[in-house]
Length: 519
Image (cartoon, rainbow, N blue to C red; front, side, top):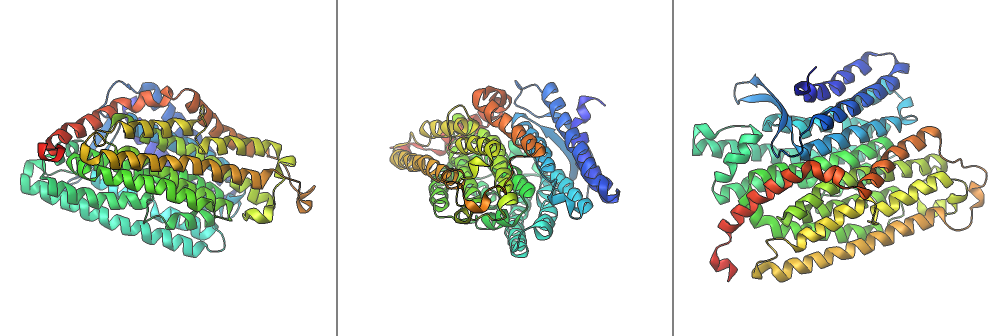
């Protein structure tokens, strides 16, 4: 098989695996899943080896006619440096989540692992799709496996959490479908030659639409993606879903599903509607800053350690909207880096929360009482690493994304306008307080769990990390440390894409910002 078919192979591995696991004997389900997870990692490594990072366009493109009526829909896949980074993240985190499913997957393993494979197919399909209808179908497909993964293997309130997740994300899908059809109709009004669902062509023809049309289309897609991100005021489904979901599914939910929303904001909202984003950029920056600070403050009052990490994800997703709204190359570079970095950090934190819960059978911080470091020294070291990465310690991946977003926001072309200068810089300074708050709630969480005197009720009852737990934590820690020490390993892949997209937006910024607005 040549490299030109690698993307199809990558999609087929989890899709075929879904049915293979469902039809296999129960004891084989986990082993098949591990082999499939390893195969996806190998294919993503082959993609990296054959990828040319100097090119900003799509590579490994495959396109086949699929449906001609009532709309022309193609099987169309391809990647650039941006989507390649998220594909690699998906395969690694998925493999780690399968490893972490050793105890969860003991109940109805065929159904569990087949749902994980179907979920992976949906996530990979979103990052690979170059047809907008195909993108939409795969974006919505994840509702089915995620609903069952929470509703069957979740906690005491799993039915409520699964239904709330389904309603919120389905509601976002309605907005996306409406925006998709609206865009197709408006392009038809401009001329039949412009009517297409090809996302590469749409990035060229959509910016030719009138500014008000762009604004309406952008808002429809943006609402859908902000729900998935999630962002205030659509965020309330996330803490409930995380608290009730089993540990490996929380790893996928925080590490990968949230990135689908972030990916859509960049690929579609920024790629298709540059003039609209010029108008909405300041609002996105303000929304990002609010999410960073508000969610960080909410973390300080949580009694459930899983809820702390869930709201921390809302806070850290705010950096993505802050960087995207800045319309600067550095801001977008930082936002993309934050997507990947947070994927590894959040997956590690949710896995580590699960290790403590498996031993103490509670997530309530007060009930645990502290002193765990004496009986879990190895897990404590991994906890400390993930905690420091989440609060943005230099030399770890969390620092790189956050500092680049702040730098890009200060250098934003929007911030240079006198009308926005004071507001934007005030917004950025406000967002900086979130970094201080994140250090506060993460270090406080670490202290309340691991420091202090050893609790009598845990004495002699708790065990340190098992071999497979060390393997999962080590995989994620390797990328957290590696990207923190040498971020160029990641940024070199997607920088040409980020630079091209921001040049396109800034070229239209000069059109939109008339002298009367600058005076």
